[in-house]
Structures are given as C-alpha cells and as structure tokens.
Image 1 (spheres, one colour):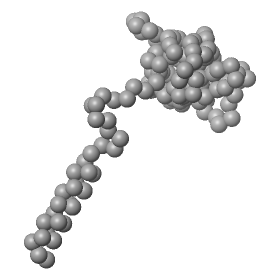
Image 2 (image 1 turned 180 degrees about the horizontal axis):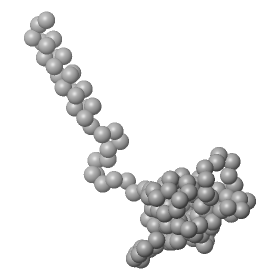
Image 3 (image 1 turned 90 degrees about the vertical axis):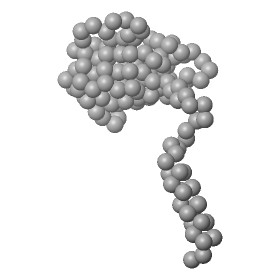
Image 4 (image 1 turned 180 degrees about the vertical axis):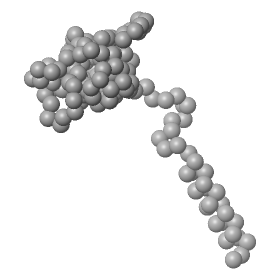
Length: 141
C-alpha cells in the first residue's frame, strides 16, 4: 500500500472514531431540551399504573414497582397550546385493558391545569394520592 492510501485509510478511521464518540442528537447549545415530566413516588406495597385523564382521553404514563420513584413523561398532546383540566389516576396492579374512569380500584387526584403539571411531584401511599408537592416539605410518607 502506498503512503497516500495509508493516509486516506488513517483519516477515514480517525473520522469514524470521532463520529462514534459523539452523542447522537446532541444540541450545540449545550443545554438539555426541557421535557415535560412529573416525579412520582410509589410508597405502597403494590405495583401501580399511573394515568393522565382528560375529559375525553386517558394516557398511561407509567408503571411503578413498590417503593419505586420515577420521572414520568407527560404526553405532548394537550400541553402544546391549551390549558385543559386533567387528573392523575393510579390503578393498583398491571393490566393492559384498564380504563381508569371505570375502574373501581382507581384513585384520582383533584383536577389540575395542564400547564401546572410539568415538574410536579406526587406520592402514592396507603391507597391515597398526595400532591402536587410544589415546594412543600415532603415529610414522612
């Protein structure tokens, strides 16, 4: 192999190595994109499913094991331009065919305005849903 081919292969290998180290989808601003999430603590003994319930729609936003804490993503639909009234619903157990509005086991939050939900913190303990914990001391669960 000639020195020109070696240099070309070396340059190509270096470019591939650099490209493989770069994180996909990284923004040039250096700031992460804000995402609409809530923090949810399952302090109970049961697995739970967490739903976001609107007047005509409901979204499964997460499933948590006992004593698990997770940041649950909120659906983009409904948060873009309007401030609609929503509630959180928690249903014990994991099932694929749950309709929280009709499930007698469901526990509901009070209605919230969609604009206020992102960043809120919620706790499910002893069959009750506590929250939002906006700037409050969480205290013992």
